[in-house]
Length: 246
Image (cartoon, rainbow, N blue to C red; front, side, top):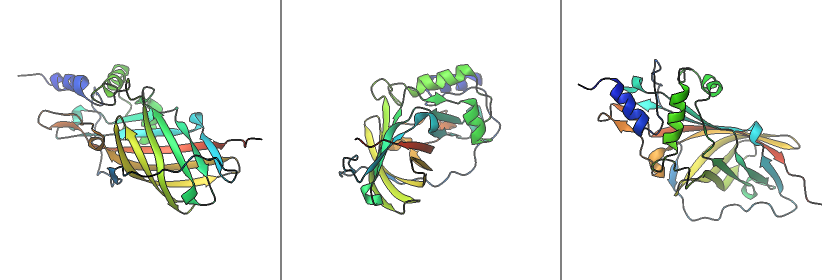
């Protein structure tokens, strides 16, 4: 008979998000999944070139994006939930007189993603206890960047670009194309926006299925231990106004 540690070994070897010693509880019900469809040919908004469009650049040190990954299956207690963070987001936002003439483009560097930072886990609550070893974190990141998963060597960035923005300034309805590896899908982004004279603050959350982007989530022991297909993405962006050219 194989020892219980065999399952943990499989997870560390084959997992999208490798794990070690288990937390005590499995997360509650899943939130509603954001719509994701194959991206249709469209002409995304063009970055600002006219005087009546105002341009902003993402401030990486003030912005954050987190990907919440959940364990599943009847043996979920043998796995960890994970918080994958980005602290060096790149991109720009441009604003016109209406939502329709505004847009954005955002890039998430894959190879610098941070796995299970203790402060991030603490902020995300009791589903993310502080019991993940440094070895487990390193194993998770190595597996995450493998060619069969995010393939950080050949696809170093995840990109999100607005294709249509409608609605009010404070709560716009955003449709965007999201590209992970060589797969592009259309997603809807519920966001809230506030602004000062020189900056924008944008926050929101949405969910995607890994399988929509050609990634097969971990499943071992006939599905008794899995990584859930659905992951939640949360973001808070600060963008600073770019001085107008003289």
